[in-house]
Length: 498
Image 1 (cartoon, rainbow, N blue to C red):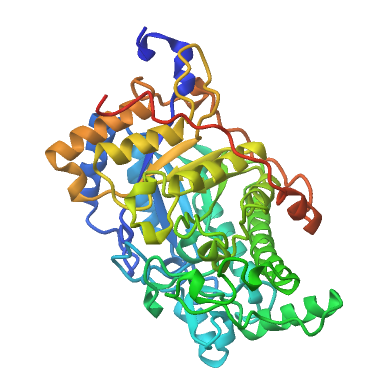
Image 2: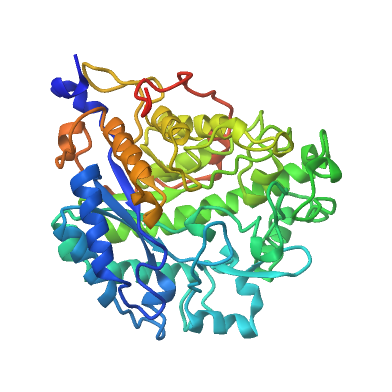
């Protein structure tokens, strides 16, 4: 029986969204080329059957004129255009700079009036050991410091989200806006900016710790004193951006990363990040409470050096993930407190996609992260990390979307909540590429036609519930205990070229 003949098999349907270009609203706060956009979205809707789009809502554009001077005009036009085509909207609260990372084709800095604070106080920005600043995202050291026209960084983000809710209330009430993905760091991801191309990082370098601003330095000193070890400090032997792990004393096999002092540092570094996410998601939960939409948080797919004992690239990004310590379940535990969805990336990648020296294992990483979301009782969604137009990439995404295949009689054992394709471009519409993309969407839909009623495939959006309890260090320590992963099939049963 074909899946499309059996209504119960609709529960295997995974919705597909397409990410809009980074500069769809340009730095002048104007909607770029709405005619072409409308024509492309119509094709995607009518011919490919996509479910919706994802779009960056840039803080640096909306609040560029000054504190609390929000201008939503262009985004309002954009969202009304999308809604008129009966496409759903995933809105990213993009509190980071666009420019300086893989795929960044436009530059949209954070608001100038915020950057101006950094002229006299550069410690508002993430800082590496040499003192190099990074203006992609405000340091989590200033989350609760009133430096920005009397507001803290957390208040900046909270006020922005409140203004978004107020100005887009009609589109939220009508069900056109379905997801709010809350930006929690560089590239919108919950991480430190440990591998900035703008500072010379190249794949697959280990990256560098980014906690040397005055505020985080003071916090580490206080935490060390509280732990009874005032002499404990930053790692001295963690190398530079493009080092290999075994070129450093810290990350080499059985290096100093296994010492008690390093365990303390790595716990502090990763916990600061998780509690930062908790604060901002907590604000979002209060703002959007009771509304029918989803909250989401994105975790970066740091697949390189995953097969090295130290997981060096993950550690510098703030993911304290080792064979004997789970770095991702604590994040999923935090997201679960806010009834959120965990969004992950690199779903298209296979272990063989990178050179052996990269020690890359994206397949195991995706399995690891998705498993931890599901073990914490939350949904997982995802994206491809790099542009993909070929069957190999699509088939890998299909496998990750339903790791144990389609259940023709009902809900599959495991299923992702949704997938967002990176990204809308002219290339996607080239003949052979578009035909394959249409097949991919059809297979993600488990061979069903487009379904506009999410309740039919088991994903009706309910009013967002209040945060259920406060995250504690004990929660994180408990979730960090190794718990294993779910089993994955070796290949998908819904190949685009099968």
